[in-house]
Image 1 (cartoon, rainbow, N blue to C red):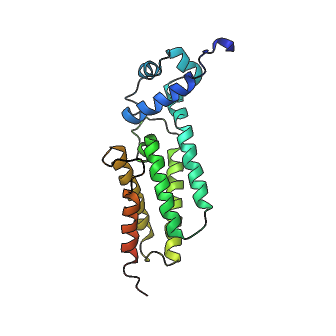
Image 2 (cartoon, rainbow, N blue to C red):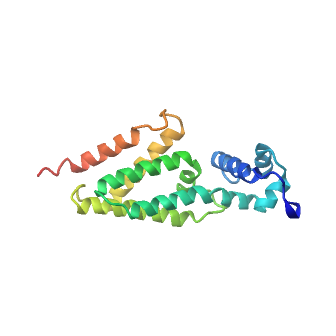
Length: 197
């Protein structure tokens, strides 16, 4: 490659993949450039060429997963069908996104001070707004009993977070576990229990 660029075309992807895994496991401050390059099988100058520094690779490593989250939020906002069905589908897709990209879940739940932020606050606000909007629709459509919207939204998000932690920690096996859909069914059945026509 020109200008002294590394000739290994896969180095960039390897560095990102390795960095995501190490950052998710050890956090920003617990990860060193030396550790990333050793695991990727490249030298420090290669990392510096592509990303300039540790913060650069940290922020870049989140571009793809957070892009997937943004796409999911856009798709749900434009969806059709009953609010409860859309809410359940969104939660399941969000759950699998968290399981495939542990770093998103970790960052949304808070980062230690001094950790560079890929605009986490904006993503969290969009996630909350989307869930809250779907829950509001479900209440308005009579699919969920009226009550405190913030509490109901928190309950749903808490179920997604907990189910994701269970899968990530290998407490539940199988790529397509049924735990979250069952939890959501229990939540919605209890919400509808008192709505006898």
